[in-house]
Amino acid sequence: MRQIFCGLLALISVMAAVTPLCAKTAVTLQAIERRQDLASTSMTFRFSSLPEYEVESGGQRVDLYLLGDVHPGELGPLPEDERIIKVLLAGHRKGLLASVLFRTPPARISVEKNARKKELVIDCYWNEPHGARPGLAMYVKGMPVAKGDGTAAVTGMTSRFAPDWEDLFFYRSPLDLRVPVSVHVPKQIPLPGGPWVTAVPSLWDKARAGKWNEVQEGLARESGLDGESVGFLTLLAVSRLQGGEPARVVPVANRVLAAGGGPALGALALYVKAVALARSGAFLQAGEVLRNRPDIVRREGALAPYLRLLLAELALEAGEPEKAVGELGGQEPGSWPSALQSAVAVRRGDILTESGKGDEALTPYESVADMTLFPSSMW
Image 1 (tube, rainbow, N blue to C red):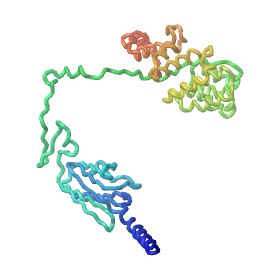
Image 2: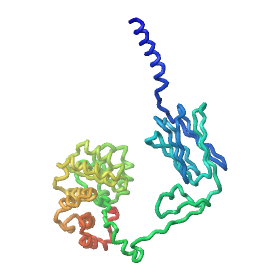
Image 3: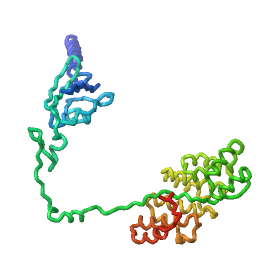
Image 4: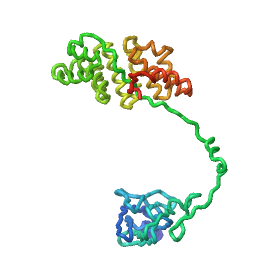
């Protein structure tokens, strides 16, 4: 019994010593390096241990198949230059594929392995350049096929459209026209009166007159005295919107909304914030800002039509013309504030276009075509 036990221990010891030698360990591709001169380019692939490999080449492409459990390590930038267009690494049923695409086909390729350094070296030797690029076209029907002398031939192709090529256009895709929407910024936005006006009364008067350059200059002078008052901040937000600086509007508008200056200032701050977001391309955020404050958006007042137009424009941008119709309602453009009439007419045309009624859209578009003060901010 004791002899049997000792025999088992010896067998187990032998198996433990042999097993690591039989198991195949994973191989890591550690680096890819390039050396070149006028006549040749060498690419060196360095590994943690040298794997088995296969090489296939044709035209401008060389494929190196690294067989077995081979994975790329943390490689630096792959060696691409005026001769090497692209080096691609991809998993393959054989293991790891390293595919190299050259700008011109190499005249000759050789592969050498260095077991001591654990490297594979691909040497590519060049001839004089010529125009053929078989690596790109050799398998494409109707494209040039490379010949041994460096020239190319094209196989003939026939088409049933050859007798009457105009028939080809009956197979074109239907035209899908999307209306580009850029939220309108009215030159005049209704400004509320109240105790906040006393902070910078002359600037509020200039703002109501549309003198925004003077307003911005005045705000820069007064910032040290009244820079934290809710009236000053509201005027600053509106002036930045009118001055074409939507990215600088949102932080100021947020401070006005946080200060709680009352319904009138809150509605104005919410409006300029949403317009500024939309003008910056953040249409989803603009819509979310308005949806979160239905108490302001649906309140009647001087800003109500401005908010409805903005909601219609956001619905158009989202590809929902039916919602835009609901915001504009059945009111004719003439019943809207004068600062919005041309914008409303254009948006009605946009709604018809988005709804597939392009012919009907001509009427509202033509109604603003001759306006001398056509609002360029709508486009």
